[in-house]
Length: 187
Image (cartoon, rainbow, N blue to C red):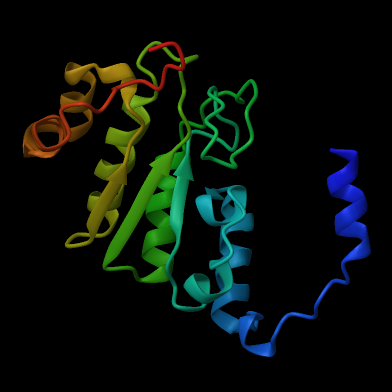
């Protein structure tokens, strides 16, 4: 390891070409959305996961709401969201998200959340209630849910989906049979 570091230290660092550098633009829409998220005490994947596209998306009034807090009970290698003991569930969070969707005048909202293995229902109520509140305050607004694996429990999925029905669990299992429902390093 030491030899590699010595060899790399001898190689000069080249300057990156101008075309590779991203130009960040914090326009009025970005600032407005940042203030709204802060005012409502909400979390977004954009911020918590350090997404490099945050400026572009927020300027286009696009954001992925992160429900259940800002800390996850799991530590997945592919995710940059903080791991730790989550704060108690904010029962008003679904209403806050729905009001934010209304304020942003979204026709389509994306909602995801941290894994809440510390809760008896793993946060299922929070997902279902968030969708219900968004539809209640924003009739006609589409909602895309990116839910955790819920440890592969199909009844939990069905509670989130409610009576609307969906092909999501069937689709995932049918299209990807070798997919493991819960990341496990020992399998």
